Figure (cartoon, helix red, strand yellow):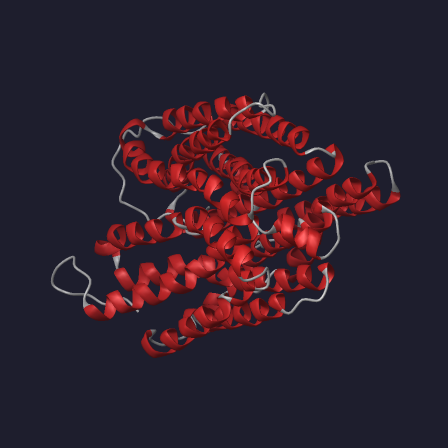
Length: 471
């Protein structure tokens, strides 16, 4: 799929192909951030608790998490173009179904299907862009990718507010249908056929059956406990026990298999373990903030969805401004120092948000969100860069999948914790305090793990494209 020219510029065919790939890749990101400002409306629309309706986001992220490693296998088995069209088709059909959902259960089920579609698209973005650009143009194309992906947390909440307030909650999902159909038509027109590689190993079906339900059981514990305001009930203990047993079973299975779904042996490499743990904790903080802040502005401040989306947008703006700078600086000063600086910058406003009261002006909460976004923007790129500097090239694809999986799983944990805390607190302000005590602790843990990241690089290594979809 790679096309070459005499210089480093992209030719017309390459530009068209890059645009088509980025259009499809942006669908899931914008949709997931749009839904963040609609959670309160959905809970009222379906007359259910935040613990239940939170699965509209948690289920989506969990489906993405589990689909990522399967997509890596399927791309080799069936070809990138076929999988791209399949992912777009599933996402469009699931979006239509979400817009037609009749109750909370049906919406959650369709969002899981939508997450499977997004889980196919997200890892393929990197593969298809890398093939299109070739090594000499990788930096240029990945810069375009980073610019598009960073718009999700900025535009998503605002667009979601406009849609929910002006058109109704259904259009948060239905808007993806015409855009997705356009993306399919363009992909069929400009994306060249790539034959299957024929090198795919056998899919780890047992791993899929253990890991996905195991993660789901652990997260279901939080929503069940929130609904009953008690962890010591059968409704909470049964999924907790099942989740622990399934995840434990996967650990035993993965250590005995040559090519498991997720190779746990990678975690014996200290730099890799630190990188993916930092990214998981970053996902917890970012996704929890994207959900709890608009809920607070709506429930405590009395704002509509649009105003809440505008007030939370600086969180995404901070990350979008900081991440490109962090990527360049980390090559000179190393991953450890920059990630620690970003963690310190994020933990201070997180602690500050545990102290706000009804007299605190909203501008201070907005500025705290901006500071958290900037801090996390300085954490992500160095943590990802550390992965590529610590793994040998043959292990980079598996390592990238694990990093992205844990970032998304961290996001699903963050959303589940928000729903649990707000449901059990009974008061938006108390809930905001509880969420940010949890997030402050998560960032403190991030700082502790970040100290294990590699320091200043001693040798210059070739540029390697970073994993896409890490938000």
